[in-house]
Amino acid sequence: MAEAVAASSDWQRYARQIRYAPFGLDGQRRLAQSQVLICGCGALGNMLAQLLVRAGVGRVRIVDRDVVDLTNIHRQLLFDESDAAQGLPKAVAAAEKLRRINTEVQIEPMVADINPSTILRFCEGVHCIVDGTDNFETRFLINEAAVRLGIPWVYGGCLGAEGQTMTIVPGKTGCLRCLMPACPP
Image 1: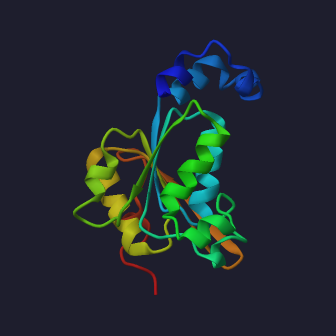
Image 2: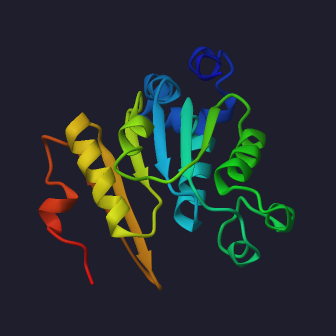
């Protein structure tokens, strides 16, 4: 499927971003050949997943251990009441909706916990990692794996009405541990 996006002769869907000179058709082709790991599919992971799929990233792997709950519906836009009533895993429910948004993107849902024994497996074959998690223990695991494997990643977090982001490129920028040696209180 990702190959279909990369080889697509019909770039109409992406015409506006292709028209953006610094990006262009070459940028769209590179995007279509890329694979991204989304860690967590709550409010932030939901939005990240939608934006990446709509932009035409070729493959998106979503890892989340949680199930959809009615309390998620108002802020996690990929989910609906039916998902909550069925108790669907967030990764599975998100994948179903994302496939309807862009059928050319390969979506790989993984219902699993991100922990020291799983993180490296989740990172296999990806070009970038994006953080949609809600805790620093997991973010530090992502950071360690990304630095070890040389994979760029985007840290993102929100608390209340405030948010933070940081792009980390191993070997070129500082990492999350450089900024925060320990989990904040």
